[in-house]
Length: 110
Length: 112
Image 1: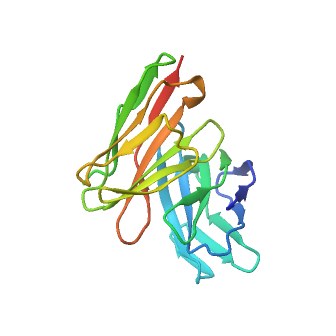
Image 2 (image 1 turned 120 degrees about the vertical axis):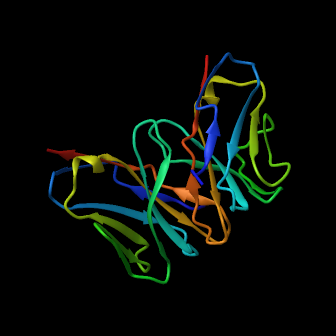
């Protein structure tokens, strides 16, 4: 079945860039997503990328996709304390089901 | 539109009781999804509706779970004879043709 893996924890200093990595197994993935979840809250869609794209930039966010390696990354430039949260990578294959990773907890140190 | 809403936000129940959660999707979205999230894990897909039709169900959705979307708008998720293992956050999401799913705030269920 589909599997999505992420590292569990990342700590960065305020103002630095954060890079959160994700690998997935489903070769038929059509969309790949990054969601942000703050404590006790639902998931907030940050950005997504189609599987035929290599890169997408949206303000401070840059998504890189290496389809050959099934590797997705999210770069957050000038990381702020408000960026502290859990970040979920997710992929959608040929159907509507979306498979999520276990999440990466980002800690931003002032 | 204010986004996907869920009710209640928190539910505490005793083992063996039935519970029902409601989800109101974004109004123009015809697709609706239910997920379950346990502590330290990502959301796990439970089921999906397109309009009023339930098109896909996960094997996680045991016989005690039932979901409906009778008029293709709001949806309900019912859990019968709750067990302590049902304690989790139940998330609802909706999408339009673009398929990008937008999530509600979730209902946190605690089974004592």
